[in-house]
Image: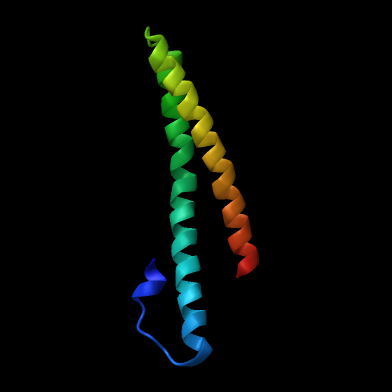
Length: 86
């Protein structure tokens, strides 16, 4: 984590600063992922709709779409939680 790379600082201020840096870093990472997931899902749907003749590939695409949609829900929930933490 980014917070682990900070130089030690005396008192609680250092711990607070480390937490803020960690939350900002996590928030940025989650926002980037939030932007990327819909593009991934769209690409999977596009491939699925364009008809791969292989059943195993279609099943894999369906699974990946479901997994990305679950992750999208998780990312949104985590971003809401971070908003309430700060």
